[in-house]
Image 1 (tube, rainbow, N blue to C red):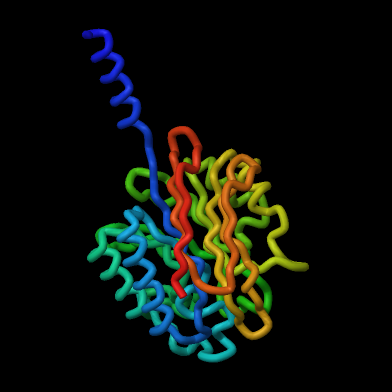
Image 2: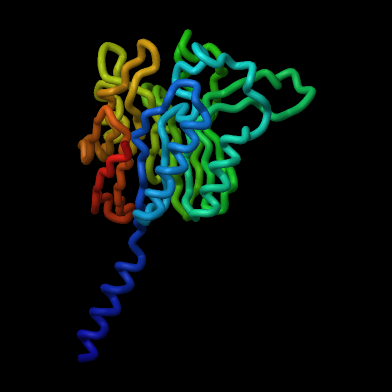
Amino acid sequence: MLYLCALWLIATASWAEESRVRIALFHMKPVLGKMTHNTLQVQTAMRVASNEGADWMATPELALTGYRFTETIGVDWIKPGPDRYVEALQAEAKALGLALLLGHLEQLSQRHDPRAEERYNTLFVIDRNGEIVARHRKINTIPVAEDWSRKGHEATVAQLDGINVGLMICADAWPSEHALALREAGAQLLINSATWPPGEHGPGDTWEKRSRETGLPVFVNNRTGKDFTLDTSKARSVLYYRGQELFSHASDTPALIILDWNISNGALERQRVIALD
C-alpha cells in the first residue's frame, strides 16, 4: 500500500511539474482602415478565447489597421504613445485576465526628440494585468508596402506566465538569423504575427525550416481577407515543430484557433477551430 501511494505521489508531482499553455490564434479578417471595427473584432475574439480557457491570444500583423492601411487613412493620425485602440484592448485584457499579443503600429513616444517621427510595425505584448510588458518592432520590413515604417533592430523575447516567448512579425521569419537569435536568448516557443499569403512571394517552407533549425515550436497567426491587391483569403495559420507541420488552418472567414501546447514534452495536446463569422 505504501508502495502504491509513493508511485501515485511521484506521478502527481511529475504531472504538476509539466508546463502547458493554451494559445488562441485569431485568424482575423480586418477591414482596411476601420480601426474601431477591427478593435471590436479583437475584443469579441478575446472574450471567446477567455471562455475557452485560453492563457494568451495572438492576432495577425497590423490587425487594427489592415496591412495596406496607408492607401485609405495615411499616416498623419499616428501619434506617440499607445493609442486609444491599444488602451481599449489593454483594459479588455485586464478585465478578462487574458494576455494579448497584438499586431499594430506605434510612433516613438519621446517629445522634442528628433526620432519622434519614427514609426514601427510592432507586436505589443500585453499581460493579464493589461500592462504592455514587451514590444517587438519588425526587423525585416518590406520595401514600398512598409515604407511608412522603420526597421527594428533587436530580437525580442517576452516572458508570459513564466514562459519565454520569442516574437516575430511576418517576414522576420524569412532569414534564419532572427529565429536563431531568439533561441539563443532563451525562447521556449516562437510566435509569428503575420500577413503572408501563399504564392510567388509567399512563405514557402520558411516556418518549417525555422522550426527545424531552432528545435522550437513556431506558432504562426496569419489572417484572411483582401487589402486592395493583397489577397490573404488562402493564407494559413500554422504550427510547426522540429520541421513537422502539426496544425494548419485557412478559411475566407474569421476563426479562433485554440491550441494546447505541452512545453515539457513538446506535444500538441488539443486543437479546436471556432468560426467567428
